[in-house]
Structures are given as structure tokens and as C-alpha cells.
Length: 284
Image (cartoon, rainbow, N blue to C red; front, side):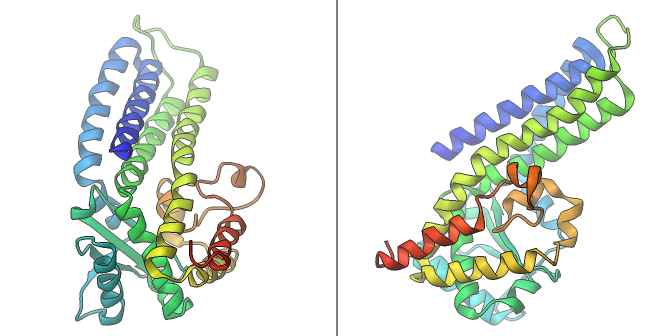
């Protein structure tokens, strides 16, 4: 229930941003058009955004015949978690990463890159998929999927405002500096909303995944390995869709400086430390 409330707040916040940019583009008329567009986007993102995200990455669905070991691993973990069996996808990418998507556990999907299957041991991969299923169990997937879709839409609308300039309700041109400012600040605000939601839920998914797999050390080892791979191998498809970076087990766009400041994920070092503390505490 709490995540449903957070999702509603996110949708309301993004709607307000849509209206602000719409007002900058076309005054009251633009604000009304943006409101109608935001309502349509909210409806679309709730029902169809998971399919859209999977298509962004050219993910292909697999089953017990096409990927027997990977599918069986997800099936076993789902049964342990008491979850319906999600759809399982593979993404043909060299960089190791994974994510979960969908509007609820009954309509969930988990996806992993072919790179992560090659890079990790079976224990480590099991820890990663347990992490993703923890997101499903915690009902994080709706808010992450919706935020990915809406952040992309607000960025597109803001860029439109900055490129074409705005008009007030009397048809007069608005200040170019203001247009450029909102073109920068609107997607930044959308990103900050995602970031505020995302960091806390990654810690919870790490904890839940470690408990589900019964092997916190394996997930810690996987995070360390993925982090080291990420330093040299960017996720090619994600570079074209940065709004979905917060859905991954590790942000493929993370880095130092200002980029690290606005990261959607907590630091890998802190995540590993918390998992190793679970090992020392007997898995708790």
C-alpha cells in the first residue's frame, strides 16, 4: 500500500512538472494540453510501461527450453519467495546487469543481460536474481517502471520547450533564459524524485535478496564484480535510455563528481559493507 501511495505522489509530481513546462510553452492553453498529456501518460505508464521498457532493450523472452538453467533458477527463487512466476527475459548486452519490471507481482518480469550470465558464478547470479525478486515482493517495480517512463516524457517535453521557446496566454514570447532554465530544471527535478525513491529501496532489495538466497556473501561478491566490470564496459543500450538506469541492479551511468552526486543508487561500497555485516551477523 505504501508503494502505491508513493507511486501516486510520483505521478502527481510529474503531472505538475508537465503543467509547468506546458505553461512555459503556451500559457494557459499549453498548461491544459500538458495536463491532458500527463493524464494520458499516467494511464499508459501504469498499464504498458513494462512492455515499453523491455522493448527499449530488445529483450527476448526465454523459458525452460531456451534457457533452462537461468529459468529454473528464477523459478526456484520465486517459489521460495511465495511469488507468482514472472516472465523471464534476456538482453544481448556485454555489460553485466539485471532489472525487474511490471505493475505488480502478478504481472512482473525479470531481465538479465547475457553479459551477467557469463561474468558471474551460479551463486552470484542467484544472489542478483534474488535481489530483483525482492523488488517484486516489495512492490518496487511499479514505481520504478512508472518513474522511468514519466522521467523520459518530462525530459522530452522540457527539451521541446527549450528548443522552441514559449508563449504566454496572450501569445507573447516568453523569456528565452526562462525556457532554457525549465528545459534543464524539469528533467533534473524528475531525476531527483527518482533518486529519492531509488536509493532506499536498493538497500531493502539487497537485504531481501540476501535473505531469499540465503547467501549475502554471494550478492556482495556479485555487486563487487559488476561494479568493476561497469568501470570499463558501459551498457550500450542504456546510454540511449538513461531514464531507465535507476531500474538496474547497478546504475550503468554511475560515475564520480556531479554524476555520482545525483546517482540513483547508493555507493557499491556501502551496499557491500551492509551485506558483509549480514554474513557476520549470521545472515540477519
